[in-house]
Length: 170
Image (cartoon, rainbow, N blue to C red):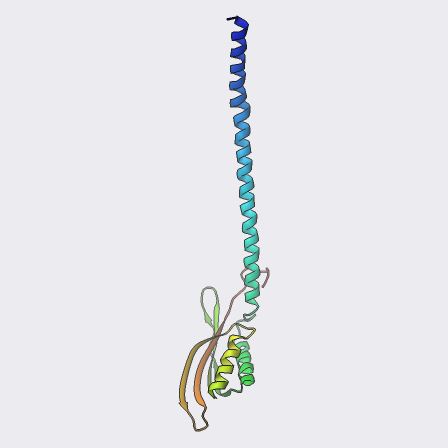
């Protein structure tokens, strides 16, 4: 064999080694790094989009809750719904707000005299109200001569303080 062919083969081998180890491998690592960064950025953008959607859902739900920790707002709403349903009140008492870690419970207890139909209308009105309210307790007492039952009912809702000070919903 000619020395020039051997030297050429050695040159090609050295060039291939240098090209592979110092050009191709680093560029492949950089391409892989770029793909990893792109995937991370896409995941970050998806997460940001999900957070925005969740915050929108929270704010939409928040519109059904009282804007203040004031039990009288709940009492007024309950009285208005009861009057529309034809329910007669004996008493209504506001419970003091109860503070929990993330929210404040507001509640009113009602003593009323009503027919079965009126009670059903009233409970339906509570359930379909624009404001979130829930019936916590319902007890039925004796039925009077007029065919109306004595009902004791506790209705509650929740006040959620703003999540972010100075942000949306606050």
